[in-house]
Length: 357
Image (cartoon, rainbow, N blue to C red; front, side, top):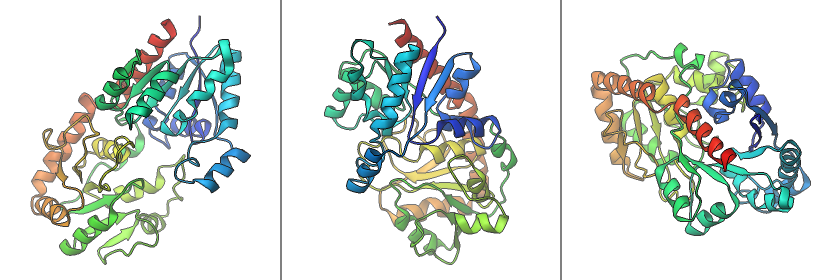
């Protein structure tokens, strides 16, 4: 029987797949769907809707419900999956909150596989184990929690970069001068990082919130994009981050303390750093399955420590050779094991196990 899947996400999957096909977006941002299609699986999707219920949730609880609660999208996906005898794939945590709705399909309920960033609490792990048929987890910690909660089909996927993305190849070289790039949004502690940058007086490019006061040596990502003439960054374009990469020799990922239940925050930017061959300096996190210091690809900083950021960035500023060595090691790590090919193989494995069950 041909393999058939229906995917849901909190962004426009169709536009993302087109952008990957055209080389405007790295393939890892569509979580292996492009590889399933290339392997002759049938993959359809239901893009995010703007239903009354979704808009209402965003107004009532924008940070809690509004990001994922979209029964209209889920209902359409269920109907399609049931009609097409397909497995439903929830591509990230924003969609997993809808998983329980699959039970409404009754005896014809499609199988549901989730890409799970973090199990969060024990209660959430049991919720996922009850309503998912399989899970591809972004770290071993999450996989263990779901297995302990009773889910049988669990795999760990090394969500690494799409090394064939043209943007990485075009912007792989850096100068001897230290320059910092900090491009993330969720759960970021830009205040601590910017205080360190101001103290060291090093160049930086950040996409901190618009109201953030930047030190004289720092520019916003929007300013860089305008100066280089690239288009605005949207969900299906990597133009603006690429403009920032031109300015950087080190990728910084400052995380807020206590980010429980949200998975390996900053992994998108870590993937960029690995693919580009840039050293990483980031707030210490136990949500990653690799240790940047043990691998020789970066340096950890304790949460909220301006002195720690100054020490790490100061060492890299004063030792260009070390930066070069760390960057080369980062790229080798991606080529060897932490990449989109490995992740796509893991997705294929968990889907095949569910299909056979």
